[in-house]
Image (cartoon, rainbow, N blue to C red; front, side):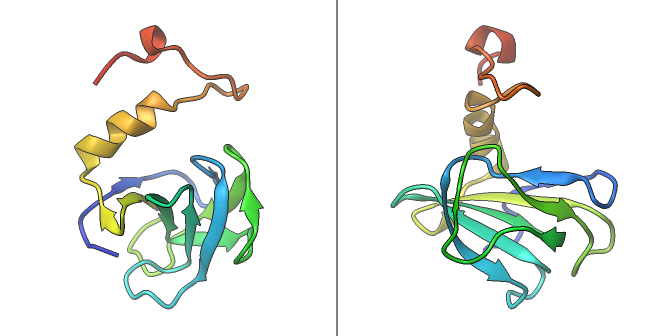
Length: 124
């Protein structure tokens, strides 16, 4: 995975991490140096999301997940502090933060899992 592409989100240890979209888990492990406990979910032929530095991983390789499904808890594996490093990869290339935060905002959901309208979330 490319360094410095993605976003770091801080929260207390154990905070739930949810899948950004439906897909198939294609990697669960800690073999990629610098990412600690890592989960990667393939959403289509083109898109994969990555969730790094997890404390507890709640999914397995090959498992199908739903959008909003709890997949891990936040931790600090291979990191200086508790954080989630979230990354979107398009055709194996990490997307710059500014680009994918717009895409992420476009798929925003409220606490009840309802999609937030474009008027509520603003535009990019």
